[in-house]
Image (cartoon, rainbow, N blue to C red; front, side, top):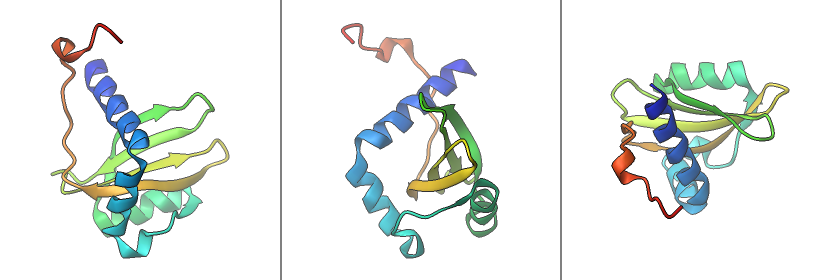
Length: 112
């Protein structure tokens, strides 16, 4: 399970590094083209009701924020949100075709 968590963390880090890709993914959901923030429970409820998404990966940032990847059971759609310690969550990116990868130590670059 730890290996899967590392993979999710790597994918989240890649999402932050590819900001323009996240912006393009947001365009697929016109109502969410602008960054939207609200109470975490409301954001989770909206994503569950409208897209049938639930958390599939989670991590804590160095500043105490909570990063969550939500997806449908089949990975058809996904959303990444960040929640600050006071409970406000903001949409970072959304898209289609989420796939969890297993950690493979053979793919780790020893030069890093």
